[in-house]
Length: 112
Image (cartoon, rainbow, N blue to C red; front, side, top):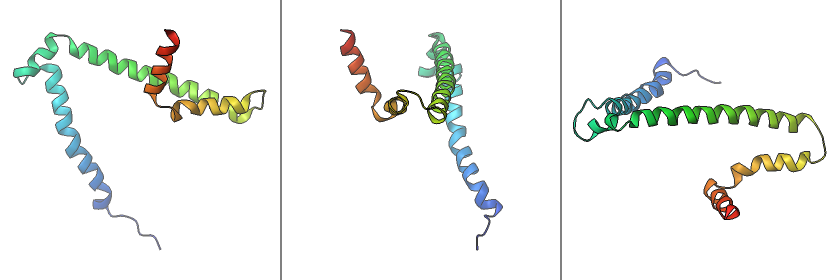
């Protein structure tokens, strides 16, 4: 009834991904090291590679914190019934439903 895909069919997405990733990684390395000369030579002189590293670390930290907090709150809402648990479960979905810029405008308006 179902046929398994051949080796070529399973390898094709990986080959395409590799063909896309190699030039992109080359651009990132060239931009960070400044080996190509020209406009990208100033990136490392300005310290932008350090900023990119710090931004990457910040992004990983945010992802880790979000995974921990989201998993724990989701587990608590799924396994326990307490006063306000239905409201909390809807509030946990709210960041997905409301775009970030709308929340940013509301927050900025609240603080003024």
